[in-house]
Image (cartoon, rainbow, N blue to C red; front, side, top):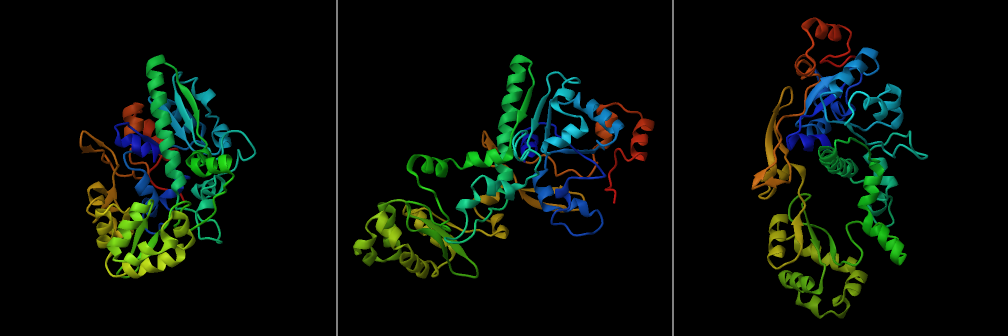
Length: 384
């Protein structure tokens, strides 16, 4: 996500893999077929705006060419466990012998030191260890993950760190070694519940779609199959507006519901009343009526609805990629002078830019290039 974003902003990104062990997301959620390593949805969504080259770093000649590629670059970014780059003998101390002002960003799951140093990690484990999962799930139920939000949090922390390091290098000529423990990026996201425990001794529990200090709040069934609308009442004024739109004046006269504390105590009862009303219309219509009177509400969109949503549809962009075809993908939620930041290229095919990297950037002859192909140091097909 970090390098896809920087690529959309104009950086030239070279994603290095090996034909012996390509990026695992290439075939995650893909099914065996011809060129099946090109159909992974996570790979296709997170790797726009990059060139793709292959290089076997377990081969000494491959390491030599990695250092030659490095000399043409500003940044090296990797998210292995710390032992991997050490085993490759491609740590920051080694690489700065070849490029003095190198910026290298490492994203180990749990940092370069400490008891979890050599443990691999994924978004789900970060969400568990950072406390995110503690807050997600039903009351009295087990902790739940939130579908990989940790990856995105770490990616954008990384993008910010790299842009600052580039600015520092341009001013001083100094490179940087940056460590970004992905789990810490998630812990940073947990500021409010951590502060509430530190300051007030309140340890947030799992409350489903509810939230401390707010009521009613939830996701309510709307008209249609598996259709829902989210509503959150954050003040007495919003509660009054909700009751008026629902045409339920009796709720305003009920002493139990006149305060936030009272509405929290009667949350289950209120939810039943709201659900009976929301089922009378579709999720867009309900949300629109509430928003017009200042009540926070929104339709719960399923993935297939998003590209047609009147707001979100302007964020989607057609991208064409070999094997996969032409599809709509979300672009970036940023506009410069009213111009949206768009994807510049699809996710790279395995080894698609080998000729550019090795023949154009490194000026290898045809014989030298073909020799790398013959030795499987580079390639464009996964070795089985």
